Image (cartoon, rainbow, N blue to C red):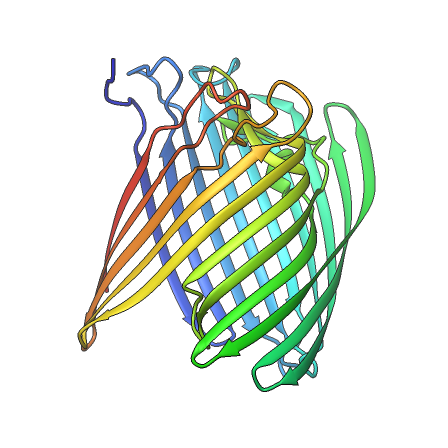
Length: 365
């Protein structure tokens, strides 16, 4: 029997300033966390404060970045987890992006520090420090005015140090993650066809490894994800592709898993395949109105040996659709957005289906 979900509200507020090379963003977010019993007296919640700043570095053409996030997971009566919790998490990020020297070389440096402590259990303190160094080389080469071939090679070096006070341990690790792609473009009249082959390794985020948001917790044993991807795009030159078809072979795919109590964490699937089709349209409805539409069909399967083989990867919906209708007149801007997704599961056996997501947004500015 369907019934209204208890303690499932959310409040969100943000302030954004954006200009070429500059960014300032402030976000305040609070979410109630429903439990598996749908209890009316449940008061568990998760709140987030976020600040992001970016500014150009003088004379170099590069950019500095800074981010600060404060998260709090509060469950005084253990309505969601097995024990009462008042977990505070803070993350500081500092970064630098190089200029694009001669359209060939790029680089970035990021430093992050993640700290977590439970006020009810102060011995469970955790301190994680991560350095990320990224460099890449682009090698464009044109054959004719209608055909071109380009390449990209990159390398990411990550150093991570973890200190856990309750265990009295301190561990350090280094990871080297190569990535690259080869891309071919061809033009026929006003149409463009692009195909690409890429390889990428992705390190789990600090949240995926160490975070805790009540219903979702980190997994420090996660391994980097490795993927080979083929992609074909068709559309008009200089515009977003109208049709995209893609296929990815993934090793150690990072995917969310949930149990029957609704508690989740990310795990590695030994092998996975992800294929999909994307359709995009951007239509002008007169001089003041515009309609943007996007639809995706996604087939994400677990190819690991075991009971979950050929099942859908948890957290990957089969259908996704987005639409935005925008109307502008002088300084007035009104936008209505609609998002819909279905066909996802919480778990690997595909026994716990997620509800259909329907989201409406209205912006007036």
